[in-house]
Length: 180
Image 1 (cartoon, helix red, strand yellow):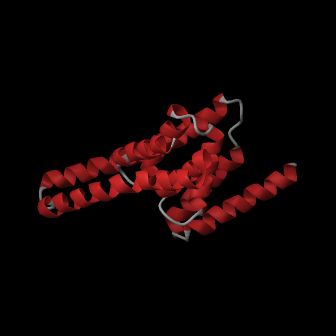
Image 2 (cartoon, helix red, strand yellow; image 1 turned 90 degrees about the vertical axis):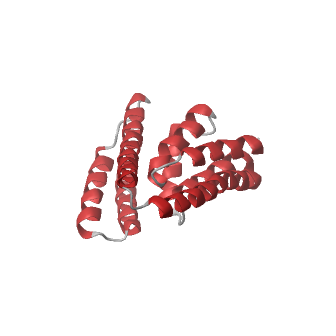
Image 3 (cartoon, helix red, strand yellow; image 1 turned 30 degrees about the vertical axis):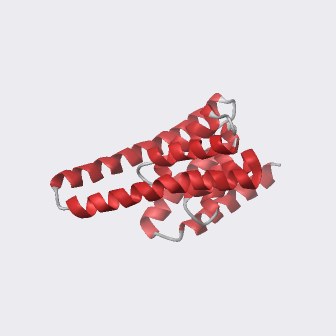
């Protein structure tokens, strides 16, 4: 099982371009659909925990999944599987970028990767909203409103994102308790 965990997260790490948020669909597909280590709801909960814990989202996800699947050895295996390829790839990319950064082709590549990252993030959002609807759960209007307001607040006023997340969590808690 530990080898399966390491290899799964090595695969994710090798394919994860565009930063942490862009890698979420890869983790979701591997963990929920392929390996079936978690349900979609558990994965959504994992994302919420990832946001509240310090550190890189991809590594946190790997650690949480590994812990759920195989305890502490699984957490270590998943984290190592996630980190090792990234370190090697980053080293190679840095060396190549330093040598060729002034070429216009390099600017085009970087721009394309930014567009890809935005598409992957949007894909994850839509996937979570659509799956919630298909699974018979209603998409929370309050959650969509909070998401929209949070986006505006973060873009306009640039507060600490943790404060915005905590505020949204508090609002959802109050509404949840009021409806209980």
